Image 1 (tube, rainbow, N blue to C red):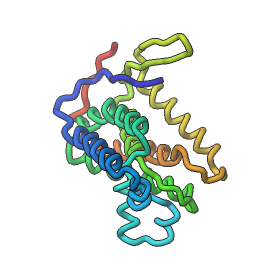
Image 2 (cartoon, rainbow, N blue to C red; image 1 turned 90 degrees about the vertical axis):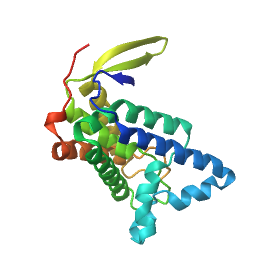
Image 3 (cartoon, rainbow, N blue to C red; image 1 turned 180 degrees about the vertical axis):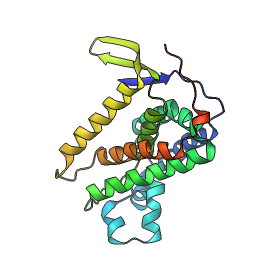
Amino acid sequence: MIPIRDQIPTRRTPIVNYILIALNIFVFFLQWLAGSNQEALVTQYALIPANFLSDLNLENITTIFSGMFMHAGLAHLAGNMLYLWIFGDNVEDSLGHGKYLLFYLIGGVIASLAHIFTNPQSQIPTVGASGAIAAVLGAYLVLYPRSRVLTFIPLGFFMRLTSVPAVIVLGLWFVLQLFSGVLSLGAADVGGVAFWAHIGGFVAGVVLAKIFENRRQRASVVRW
């Protein structure tokens, strides 16, 4: 299932969400400009769990944040930004601009820590906003449990657009991450998807939404 858009209009311009999307795109553009030096750039600024745990200096700590805005390719960036575009504006609308920024960064940090402690010996650079975005998804599920999401469902030659409850779209996403994460435990460190960052981020988003939520700003839900 590929989400296209949700049904809930925002009451204010999601300026922080726009800025976060722009920053991710800008950093990816800088990676592209690096050309043949891109690998060295990623090694320097991406989060590497083994390095982080072996020496908790300022440089290694800041890679949690710098790695959060880097991506491994255009498809990686596009997928992450699609989810952030669809779900982030409503979470910002509910929490408020300042709280949303703090929420996003804390969610990303917790997601990174979940990845570090499930892959403590990994020497593979970890990049991507998906941990923080997973927190956004968890928060959306808490804040708008009755929302519906216009979703593209490709089934071989059968393709359709349909309205699906957000609890199904996001619930299935989380179950898939959890299933894949459990299977990855003890597996060889060959890179790929940081499932435990997604799991940690999503759970963090559920908890943080309860802490940060401003109930007066919760948007009403109109069913399709």
